[in-house]
Amino acid sequence: MTRINPGGTIGILGGGQLGRMLALSAAQLGYRCHIFCPEENSPAFQVADRHTVASYTNEAALIEFSKSVDVATYEFENVPGNTADTVAAHTLLRPGARALTVTQDRLTEKQFLGEAGVQTAPYEAFHTAEELEAAFKVIGRPSVAKTRRFGYDGKGQKLVKTPKDLEAVLDVTQNTPAILEGFIPFDREISVVVARSASGDVAAYPVGENVHTNHILDTTDVPAGVSERVEAKAKVMATKVANALDYVGVMAVEMFVTDSSGEIIVNEIAPRVHNSGHWTMDGARTSQFEQHIRAICDLPLGDTRALGKVRMKNLLGEEILDVEKFLEDPIASLHHYGKSEPRPGRKMGHVTWVERAE
Ligand code: AMP
Picture 1 (spheres, helix red, strand yellow):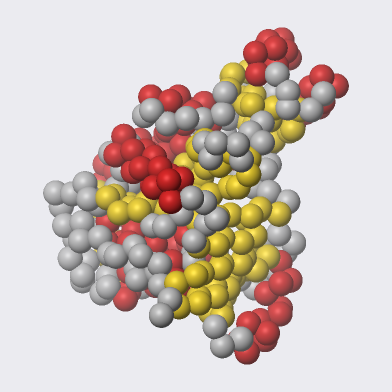
Picture 2 (tube, rainbow, N blue to C red):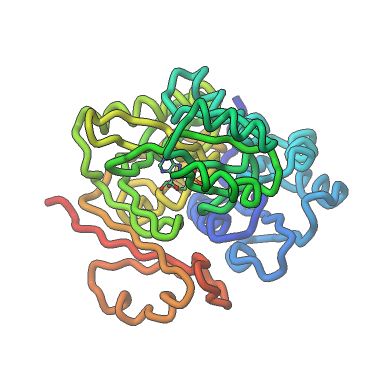
């Protein structure tokens, strides 16, 4: 196993808030960061040693970036396959390219989860109108159509409640390959942030309960309002997923908990640090960002225990203009991502409140 000691350089593909918070944690542990991102003025550039502005298809720039770092990682799951391959040919890429190929496509992700012995919503793949009709006959209603690739925050999704709703599905999927999955009448949405180090050590954080508004994460609460049995089972499932992927780094596994029996159904996996893990920055002994750096550098994993009762709230768009009230709140911690333009729905920052356990 290759350990990268403090003093080394970590490359990060992507310069958004996740890259920024990773770079801050890396600096705390004595590493330098080199950020690679196509957008000028990316939030992570403000806090990193070095950055490269270039397209993810610019092979020469990718090679130069890869040669300048001891290990590379990414802050988003849609890293193009060729980009990951180029980087992996010139440096260590952690997590590896397989985590990307499995999770970039909802069909391969669901197939992988099934093989790993984890329950998902029932699903059928479709592309054409005829295939959609056939899928609808199997899955029934209500169901949710989702594009296989590039869907996020509810984009590329259509809820199907009546056969008439089927007419709009192909407009939403834009005739790209998609899946139709059974709608899960869930009681709660939860996620488990789990880390696996290059040496194979695994540590899961306490389960977070997530509330989405307009398909975008609004709040995460820890502890989640689930039984000890569900808490333990969710962590076991996330660990199983990380091990089955031979994963290195921090990942989030998003799940539905059904009301009747407390059954857990995995919705999706994010092969990266995740918004539902932001609470760990102030509410756990080790933040998910530090944990990711530890995992990819093959340092011992940190303690994942929560420090008390924690709530994280995202600040979207103009909510960031209201920072005064959070600054005045003695138990609130404000995280501002340094983005200049507060567009509607844009993640501008977050706040955490920690009620410390005695
Ligand atoms: P996703 O893009 O798959 O994370 O879905 C975004 C959100 O849509 C989820 O967080 C759920 O609130 C809802 N959703 C997605 N799939 C389903 C499903 N099969 N059943 C019920 N709700 C769903």
